Image (cartoon, rainbow, N blue to C red; front, side):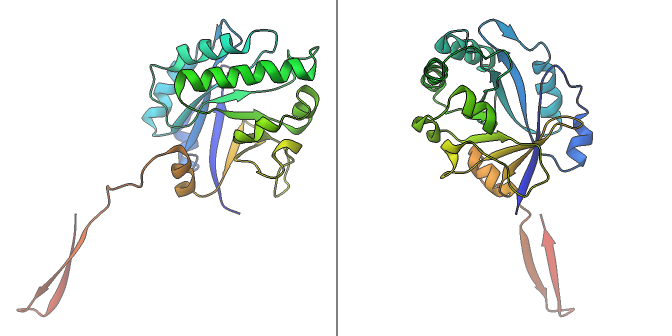
Length: 224
């Protein structure tokens, strides 16, 4: 199988971007916000440092079910809208700080977040979760398959376990390990990844011209 490698980071990680670039990693998502009033105080510096190493960047929001989904979407969008992003935004759906609510309430508030964010930004987010969290927090939501899945499953298996809602569609990104930090695979080649994020094929290609010199009977290749 063909994968494209990347990472996702927050204030918990100190990232040596050049080292990851030299390992062949090309994309990253940065935690920007959580809930309705918390912003990661490291994401802007990480954004600048990663851009210097030519990473394709996206932002993510940690969803907190205790607060209104639409308000969270506005908080996230207002935090990131003045920066230029390559990758679609992501909403992080996990159990930590999110237990004690019914599946119907959780699903409704998450859907409000997704709808509001798309209305504000014109961009459809990616949903990050893992199989057990989704099954416990949401259960089943037919609307979820409209969103690409980023699944967390730390395993050496060839494919990850995914929530039942995406069984027919499959995963787009896979967080396969958290050591030494969260590392991810995109399901496809670099060309596939660039097509997914909407980057046009590069036109900055070397042009080769062929010149025949009759005096020497040699063919001369010129690149430039």
